[in-house]
Amino acid sequence: MVRIQFAIDLHYELSFQGADFVFNIHAAKTAAQSIVSEQLSISQQVPHTIQTDPATCTRYLRLTGAPGPLHISYKAVLDIKQQIDLPDLIQEVPIAQLPLSALTYIYPSRYCQSDRLAALAMSEFGHLPKGYRRVEAIRNWVNQKVTFKGNTSSSTTSALDTLIDRVGVCRDFAHMMIAICRALNIPARFTTGIDYGADPALGPTDFHAYVEVFLGTRWYIFDPSGTAIPMGFIRLATGRDAADVSFATIFGGVISQPPVISIAAITETGQAWELPRHRHEALSTDTPQPAVAA
Image 1 (cartoon, rainbow, N blue to C red):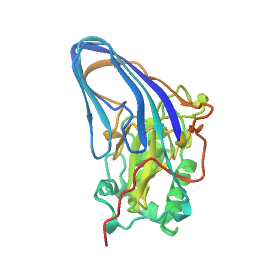
Image 2 (tube, rainbow, N blue to C red):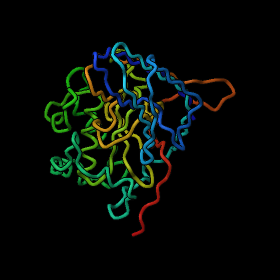
Image 3 (cartoon, rainbow, N blue to C red):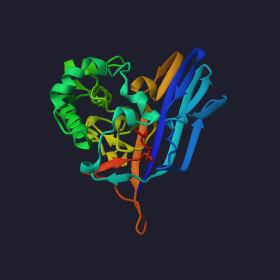
Image 4 (cartoon, one colour):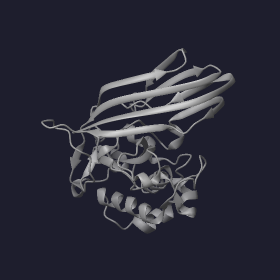
């Protein structure tokens, strides 16, 4: 088990009309990710609500900010109990046997145009044995074909753009891997967290995008950018692609500063908490989902 503490600070200056916000900054509450403590601070005395999507466990903070400065601070400590499995024993699931919750993630979406990548996917990966190792090969291919470089993509960059440009940030790697998986009828979804273990040379600690792929009876973690340590990932939000899980969606005139984020693993003598490390096994923070009977 891993114990993680993290903090997110967001600063905005709102125009005279104010603005509406939808945030995805709360740690998801799942059977494998439990909240030890959390604290939310909002500088303005305005009403707010926190709502949870029962399908994804994503928690949405919603509020209407008044004109002037707005500071949002969220801190949490959580325990993550990951399922660790042997990759060679994990199989792909036939479409007819996928649980209903996975079906959403086999279709093309705004940033993951899997219908446009069918020929590429079959050419590169169609001949490989189906299962975890094929998905791992997709992850490795994306990691090798795309160069990680900041400020090389925008909020409109899609998997197709990344395939052409061969450069991007974590969300671009994730979109490309997801699109290829879906082109092979493998459910894949976009998940956000924080880049635990990332090289400081890449810049300040930031939000991180990674991929979860449905295999066997679970969603397994893959990090195609290879910039962080999956064992230290927390789940914030999950969706079809980045359009579903932006850390802040803003409606109104706002000047924003870059988020200030910190994350650390907690270890203590006599406790069961591990220091996150790279592992060769398959990792999942999801509960088993039974397949549909054939």
